[in-house]
Image 1 (cartoon, protein in one colour):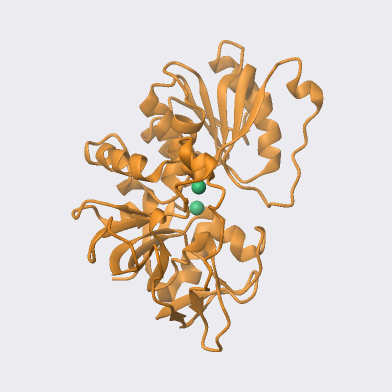
Image 2 (cartoon, helix red, strand yellow; image 1 turned 180 degrees about the vertical axis):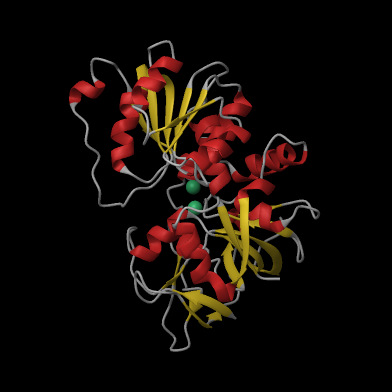
Length: 360
Ligand SMILES: [Zn+2]
Ligand SMILES: [Zn+2]
């Protein structure tokens, strides 16, 4: 099969024939229909995430079940599915206490490498998926069946960007109606935190970005107010909009440690700052004890929107179908696999929310 392989950080991916092994016990093979480009893919390409080369990126995938491994009964050949990086064992402490996204085995690589290049070298698969390829083999726990009439370029977005943003607000922070929310960064994740905050009834929902075009879009997705952090003293604007207190919740969806430090200044006394966007994994956040202690602020991490795939993806699809979740508007472009380097460059420029690689 054809795949886009990264052999060197900061260099274009190489399109080449690779070999995919058969699905083993508890695994399925999927014919990929669509894989969206996430900002984490850019980090991977630049070597800003742990792991070396060579690898195949892509972890926001949707496609059709093509082969079933031993013991798989929950899906059938031909079923359309979303494929997420959220593998879970189903039996560990976190799986059995309602947090499968924190499964102790979620990052375990498969026992046998799934993909090798023509020289027989195993290729690392990001998210244990490697969706920038015509087929993938994944663990059955990573797969959620979707209705047959669900467009798969939209469905792919549910694998990461949508659940990370929306779930961060709804599942992880559990924002309640009329609590005030700031979303820092109106990108592929932030726009979904805005949708989540609007859905849950937060008020105000304040979008913060440095691009006026993005802030305009934020309003279409439910932001009640916008602040351009470049033009205004953002903290003053946020205090004005929150009775002088600051926000109950600040969601930092940009991958920047400076934004996390700034986010703490946006939060109210006892407010919560949720780190969602992944900065370079070697970077450090700068805070003083006085930023946190006298104000009793909370700083929390939020991973993949604390999503329970089997429960949340069908709910989000129902919300999409009844007009409560915008997905169509998130797709900014479709590209064939041959143009993946071009699509990545556009994503890096921050144009549009999601560029999707299409395989059919
Ligand atoms: Zn992602
Ligand atoms: Zn587990």
